[in-house]
Amino acid sequence: MVSAGPFKDLMTSGQRLSDHRFYGLIVAISYGTVSITITLFNKAVFSYYSFKFPLTLFVTQMLLSLVFVNALKFLSPEKFGFPNFQLSMARKLLPMALGWWIYGVSGVIALKYLNVPMFSAIRRFTTIVVMFGEWRLRGRIPPRNQQLAVIVMTIGAAIAGLTDITFNFVGYFWVLICAFSTALYLLFIDKLGRESGLNDFGLLFYNNVLALPFMVGSLLVSGELEGVRQYKLLYDAKFQLFFVVSAAQAFLLNFFIFFCTRVNSPLVTSITGTVKDLVTNILGMTLFGDFPFKPLNLVSLGVCFAGSAWYTRLKYLASVAPFQRRPQAEATGLKLMEEGQAAADKAPPAAAAQAVA
Image (tube, rainbow, N blue to C red; front, side):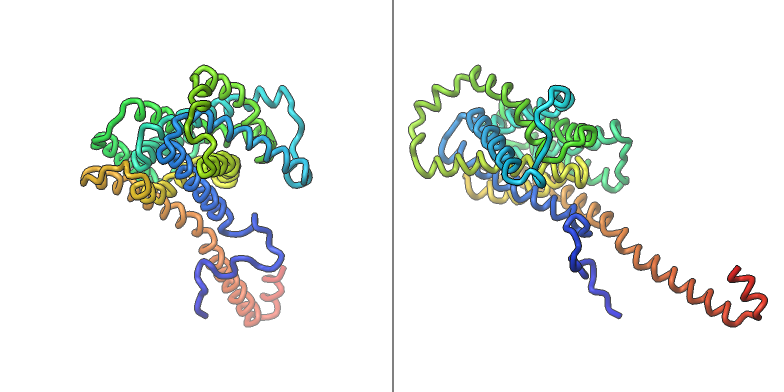
């Protein structure tokens, strides 16, 4: 019989999506898709519309996320519900919220100074930090070939920074802060998410509630509000559309970060971010006009994303290996049973009785 391949019987009747063999891959792709769109919308707001007020955007994103989370809880508490605010739970989850605050602020500030490809490349340092953190916190050690793939993408990111002719110290400072805080944020989601017992919407609620005071304080100290008041396109309908879509997408992005990290692992979430950056970079190179097409830049980015593609292939092969071994094991077991039954049929009655006993 000819096999239908790895996509045979993707969904059987009555099968839950969470039982699907590619469930983790579906979640990772969903996270990557949302992450691509929000990065491009953020860059459009900052570059195309010259809106240089990232903290204002971030506070708006947080407020809309809280509105969405509470609205879903109200509309369908059995699906999206979570316990009411508890001070003890807030203290436990505070490190996660602080990691997200630093990650969010540093990311939106870095995008003001860097083009999308360079921003994405330098953030690849996140993956190696996550790998180290998983080893320290949970004793997870990836196979040697996966380690080599991560090292390749990290070297590519380093070369990209060294060959960037548009080097901006402020931008690089913030993107490195973003890379390390992203790693800590993912590790905290994995650790504190398991310990808290909350679902993803509960974690998202606490994340925004706890980080909001820090973000509002940052906004007030920055003096951005006066600049926003004088912004010449503040009442432009197209700008408002981009601004609102960007802010609303933050809810989906954070939900899928939680979801992907808990369904897969912090490292898989980090790698998914790397893969989506390849698409983001191609679009960023052509849409915003701030990327210098120089040979060294292109080669360094190519090395970075070759490592990403290699790692992704290794993770895919590792994920489908159990499903490929299962039919072989079942076939081997069936063959042994048939051989045993045939031997019993041929044996003398006394020997057959002894075999059955």
